[in-house]
Length: 112
Image (cartoon, rainbow, N blue to C red):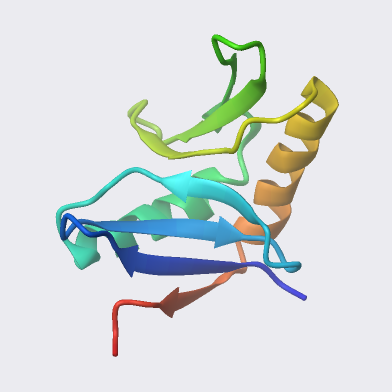
């Protein structure tokens, strides 16, 4: 089963998306966007940049948990992963973004 992007609207009226793997697990969560059109552009940027190794910034939280950011060519963060229990799990998350983002469909959860 292929991955998918889901766009939703937050309580504060801003838009965001999640990239979900084929099993439904969230593998990347976007930043907040002012408009739905901007969120859709973020999805397209994720599809384009998600295939490039150099766009993934690996990091460690203050509590020692590894995570990653996906960045666009201008260095802006497109999305962030969950916190992982190990570096190997984080690497699997990056591989999952690479596998799922490019061909993922978009589901708009903002429409009634």
